[in-house]
Length: 116
Length: 109
Image 1 (cartoon, chains in turn yellow, brown):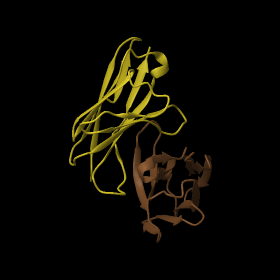
Image 2: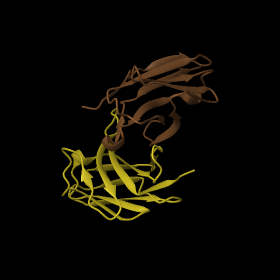
Image 3: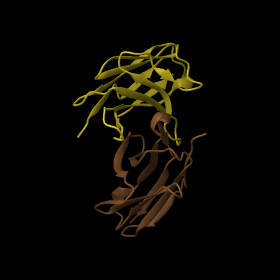
Image 4: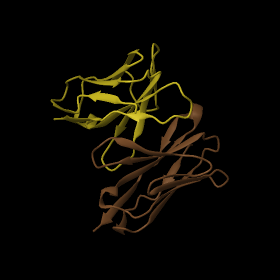
């Protein structure tokens, strides 16, 4: 089945650090990738949608200058949390979607980010 | 506003019992529907897609009622390993995916 790899799985760093998370589709071309954030005991909240070769579309309330998304190829999207602060601590999950209409998204393993 | 509503639970169910969850959605233009399972502190994993005619995968049965805009998931002969949060996910096409908040299931021995 379709596999999405997300790295790193766990990050602990000091406030002010920028953190880069990678999301790769391993066996299919992902025309669209999504970045979600999940706070404890809450559902996934979409942060942004990225399409290969174009700028990401951010959801309302998500700062595009703080959460930089790059989708340079059909198999790789990156999310950079710039100058992270404790309130950015969360579980970040990427997902990838291929070309076929109606197919489910395939999720990465997630990245647990803790900012001290 | 597009919404997907689920009973958050928790549902405490004895092992071997049958349990059913419902999910309602507000976007009548929704095109496809899924149930995901999420274990604690892990990413969601696709459990099954939901088709208009209803579909079954082993102990799991999913049904869709477009007229009433609800989706159901039935788990028969529940196992301890079924304990998880079950997310109802609706694809609104151009409106994208909307996730329910999840239903927490606890299977008790």
